[in-house]
Structures are given as structure tokens and as C-alpha cells.
Image (cartoon, rainbow, N blue to C red):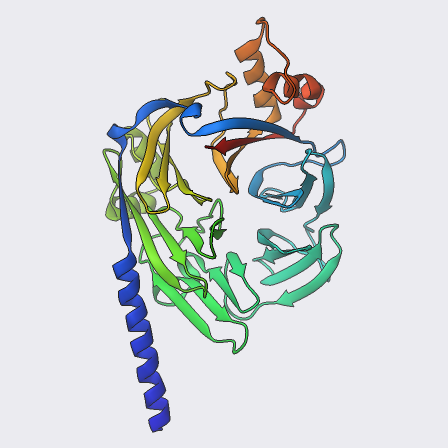
Amino acid sequence: MYKYIYLVILATIFFSCSEEETEKNNKILTIDLKNGHEGKLSDIFNSIEYTLLDAGDNEVLAMPANLRIKDSLIFVRDSRLSNIMIFKMDGSLYSVIRAHLNPGPGEFLQSEDFQLGADWIKVRDYPQNKSFTYDFKGNLLDEIREGEELYYYFYETKDWKLAYMGHSNGPDSKLFLRKDKLNEELLFQYSFPNEFSHINIGSKNGFMQDVSDSSVFFAIPYSYEIIRFDEKGVVDMVIELDIKNGGITKEQRNLWVLERNLRQMAKEGKLVTHTDTFFPMWNHFFVHLRQESPNRAINHFIVFNKDFEMMYQGYDLENDMDGMRLDGVPWSYHENSIILMINSNQFYNAYIESFGGKSVKQVKGSVHDFFQKNMGRLKEDQYVMVSLNMK
């Protein structure tokens, strides 16, 4: 009995200290939208690379979602069809791991998230509450039915797994679950009271590993908060964006979500509703904010160094590097590159609008070289991956 009480006291002290340490390490990053300038891509990038993700004649990439690059392969989750499309670095299709409408053994219904290993991919199927592991050719390696905990996005090591529970599955409004693989111990982390429990709010990037260390980040959907987890999978920092001249309060956001007029109010007030992008890269944190307006959205690009000092703030960056109009927004990252995804038809039309009737120099690796080589396929329903390489 006394041993049990002693352990409880120790656990209470540990988690109290952890919470105090987290609060001490918290960061508030102030971003005044009026301080941004109408910039250029060359302000923060030094080169652009274009890759046509060609699904071929018998496959289709309907709506790209999560995109990750590992070694010589590009992995894209299709949020509409739930397939995992795997491409080579030249953009040619390598394999497809398919979802199934009526799944049998070893088959998933809906790919909510995935994680990559050395030679395997693990797929999270929320409706079946299962996880499936395949090799990169789509051969089943493992199938696991999860426990009672429901979650959407995940990140795991050999010792523990992190999971994002969403706004309705966790106890006491806690969003994250850490599960110890050795003793099955569950730790629910970070309370986030809100009015979103009636809807499922998706994450564009899920858990993001810092390229330069073992930290893992997660941008909470429809908020300005980014959570950092340490090498043990425990919350050790909360980063909150304090947006001036275009931000909204939590109370406003919650009210407008309940009244289902958040988008309308954001447009009328020229507001930023949430953190669209927070990428932990080699030497920087890259932030993208979408500011709504009655006419067209304004895209803000902000760069912080790893000490959270602002290095750059611009908006609607002009492509002064090759003149191509790039309408895509930051979708993913790899090492020191920001990745945009643009529908090939839109890319084709934008190229003609930018360069039609003009004399251009077709240098190898340029946008003109890319267009000439892929002109026919660009007219079809494919996607162009644009890599903006940071300075």
C-alpha cells in the first residue's frame, strides 16, 4: 500500500516538473502582418526544381495529401482515393499501395496517415482501427488491430508511439497519446479545450520530424499552436504564434466554427484562421500563413532561425528566378527544400500565360526545358512537384 502511494507521489512530482519545464520553455512568436514586404523568391531561395509526377495511363493521383521523400523515392497519399502512390525521383511511377472499398485480410479501407522506415511503409486505417505495414512494392509485412484508443496521425520509434487523438477521442480534451511499447503504459498529453469536438479537423502534415535533431513537431489544426515533443515523445515546448493585424482569438474562432461562418468572417476581416505551415528544417523554421480577403488570399512567408529569431517576412513572393507563375502553396518539406504541388493543367496554362509568344532560352534543368520535355503529359491530369531550395 505504502509502495503504491510512493509511486503515485513520484509520478505526480515527475509530471508536475515536466509541466513546469514545458511552461518555462514555451515560445510566443509575434508576427505583425503589416511588417511584411512584397518580396521575391530569391530573398530566401537559391534554385527551383520541377518534377512531373506521372501516374501513367492506368493510374490517377486524384487529390495529393501527405507527401514525403525518402532516399530515392517520393511517397504521396491520395486523400480522395486513399491510395499511397510511390514515385521515383525522376517522377515516374514506382508502385501503388491500394485502398479497398471492401477490405479483406491485409487490406486497408482508408489511409489516414503513413510513416516510412528503411524499407517499409506503415499505413494507418482509422475506420478499421488497424495499421498495415508493407514493403515499397506493396507486399504485406504486418497487420495490427489497435487497442481501444482511436487516433488519426502517428509517429513511432522502436520504444514508443505518438498519436494525435483529434478533438473528440482523448480524455479531458487531451490531444496526444504516447504509448510505451515495452510496458504498454499510456500517457495522454496537452489539453486543448475547444468547440471542435463535433467535427474531424485534418492535419496537412501530421507529425513532422526536425531534420536537424530528434525533436518532433505537430501544428494543431485550426489554431496558432505548434507542439514540440522531445526524443522520448513527451511534450517539451508549446510554440504559439501571436499574429498582429490579422489574427483572431480562440473565442472568435470557436464561435465562428459553431456558427459555421468562419471562412466568411475571415474574408471580411482579412484574417488568418490558423497556422497553415510550420516546417522544422535544417537551419530554419519555415512558416506559411494564408490571410483571407474578399478578393484573393495573401500568402505570407516567414523564416525563423533555430533560436526562434525572425530572419525574413514577406508576402506574395514574385518568382524573379525563372519568371514562372507558381500558384501552389507550401505542401511539404525535405531537408532544405520547400515543396509545392501544382495540378499539371494549371501549370501548363500558367506557363503559356507567362511565356507564350516570348523568346526563351532552353537551358537544361530550367522551367523551359521541363516544359518542352513534358508538354504532352502536362495537358493531362497529373501533378507537378516544385522544389524551392532554401539559401
